[in-house]
Image (cartoon, rainbow, N blue to C red; front, side):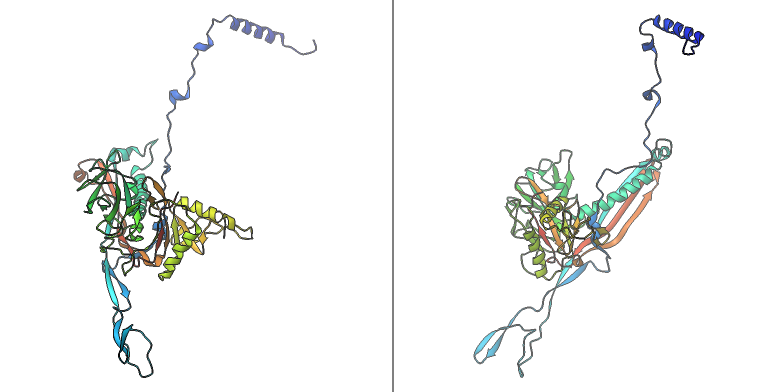
Amino acid sequence: MADNINLSEFIAGAERNLRQSMLPPGYFAKQTYLQTGDVFNATYGRKVWDALNNQTRFWNIVRKVQWGPTTGWRVRSDRGPGDTTQVLATGITGTVNSRSRPITETGALPQIDSSAFQRVDSLPRIVASAFGVSLVGQITSGLEGGMGDNLAVEQEAAARDHIKEINQELLLSATDRIATTGASDTAVGANTAGHMRPGDTFAQSGAGSGAAQTFYGTNAAGELIFSLTNLAAGVTTVKSRAGFTSLDDIVETDGRNVATTDMSGGSHSIGASVYNQSVRPANGWNAGAVVLDNNGVGRNLNLALLDQAIREVRVNGADPDVILMGYDQFDRLSSLLQAQQRYMDWGEFVVKVGDESTLPGSHAGFQVATYRGIPVIVDPDVPTSQSATAELGSNVYVLDTRYLELAVAAPTQYIDNRDFFQANAFVLRGLFYTIGELRALRIDAHSKITDLNA
């Protein structure tokens, strides 16, 4: 034969094939194999990934200062009490500025006049974040399949949550629309999560009595729990905060429409009771900030609006150094500047503001780091506005951060407790707390564009 064939192996293989062909039907189907599900238990490793947005950009950019020995600050509101009536010529009287004016060669000196000083104060606010683990859970966390150290994992998470809560409080909305009217446990706010925290007080607009109510929280159905009277259709405005005063509380003014509701005057007027103020008129030493609204009707952000917001605070004597907005308005701003993009020899750049950097951008392109030389900071917690029927897009703020500061009475601190008798349980507990307040040393140095579409 041409090929070398081992005859004995050939015969043995033929016999095996013959035996297999004579096995009963289903023989191989009866065999079982050890599979993954029989012996394998999934373990997840000790690394914990956070699926939450922990960005705290406004917190990062605002100045932190020591609280100091006082609870208030003074604002010089006038160069002098006002003009005085004087004899200007024989038989002629008129008004002149009594403090600063031209003097003729032998003319009389100006009358002595004094500046006007106003007092603003706000007490420190406390924000706390608590957590705990069971003793058995802590012991077993070190075993195979555990997270390694439950207390440490929860401590790290609570630290992030604590700063995130402060950032959210600093960016709470000053107003909310009542979506469902009714008493406590029945009324529903359109965006209460971005409006109030437990312990805040608010007043009802429109048909409401204007009496301050206390907000306690929401139930499982999202209905509001509050004190006093029923809530009618219309807008609620914050009167006081249990936590930090928010930027939106500050950058407001009385006498405008919110979600088509007239908010001019009365105890429910916007901006009243910020700090120790009872009213926030359009003009005056305690004047409200510049607010460019559209009576609760959504419109798109445009460059003319942004230019006006910058111009009006500059007219007030401010020098804005930050533009704060949400991601929806940032995308719109980038698209507005698309037509100005020039393909020149410029690389991407970022601008540093406090502990935060802008998103990368070119000098005029789809993503911008600055607009007219002012850094653009994007924060997902920027509050939105409300129309009469729906939630609109995020606001845009033009800020002069020289007049904004986070006064810290007690820096963020951590304490824990392992006293089982005190807890009446075998648990380990921890707490982060911060005491401070957001101070606006000038209110009219900031502006807001609201009633914007997403």
